[in-house]
Length: 223
Image (cartoon, rainbow, N blue to C red):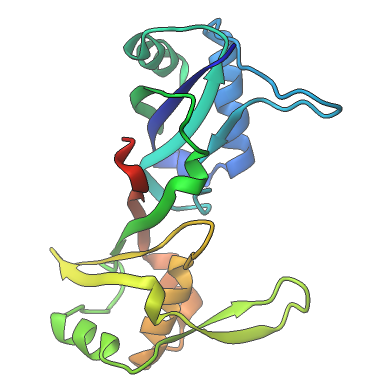
């Protein structure tokens, strides 16, 4: 019998440059070093029952990320949090551990939206409410993405995946779809926004901005 837990964690500092797979390995090693045993699936290719809700792109700051995990023991969530945090490196921190009931679906299946903040302070771009209103007033908004099979760049409609877009304290903030049924890569939206206002040095701008995923929004209010 296993016990399900939901970890809420942050990924900041230099740790924003480690990959999704390396982050999973870090958590597995740290959990093991704390003496906790992760439940493995059965079958010919058993794997640990742990998964991160939505992978965070390399270089992004994550302030409210989620990971579900199944352990073999019923342990106090605060004790798990404190013990694992003592072993984790700077830049990865668990902010909360919560027990989950057995009937909770996969955390990735419960993910619906993500909220981002974009810091343009290292660029010469001055954001305004008027820019946002003008951009969103388009009948349709298109973004460019690369097809997996053909590798061709195609234009796709994205307006229905944008839930909100504002300027707050000089930051560009938006909420977009982020789930298994509908998902919008924030860089696709950013490039569409920049192209609309005549910026063509996209790679240079993307290198200078800071992208933070402030939080992931889940349905069913399980957090």
